[in-house]
Length: 169
Ligand code: FEO
Image 1 (cartoon, rainbow, N blue to C red):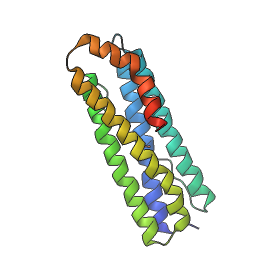
Image 2: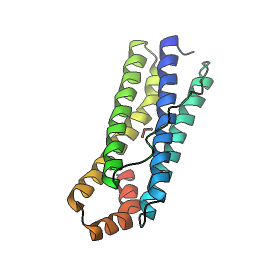
Image 3: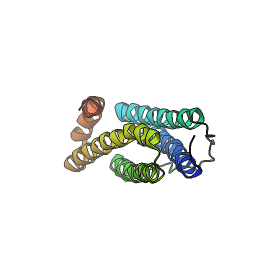
């Protein structure tokens, strides 16, 4: 059985994962109407879907442990971006924020001596390391590319391979 404190923390995390899915879905939709970045668009759609899976995993865990996962109301995410670079900078900032909130959940699980939840959350801890690493790699590459159009062409060409290689690290 989950303590009320753990349950509240996990419900807050459900909202953050749901919001993350919306944030990346908005990036995907914006990116889809920009010319020539089909793979960047595919990356954002895929990322949005992954966040939905993170949310679902938490929902099932809370309900299976005798709690009640509450489906949250969500804020409208940012809809447009000055550039791809801005979108990826915002993605990195968002992932750092998500890591912070996962760490808070881990702290609370330990304080409540809820070792099952602590164990469950280790998957998210590992996932956040990967997601932050991926976001940093993308940002570093975009920094190097600057305004170079052929660089952006290659970034779009390689983005799915880069994300797959970071995921397999
Ligand atoms: Fe589920 Fe990207 O945090």
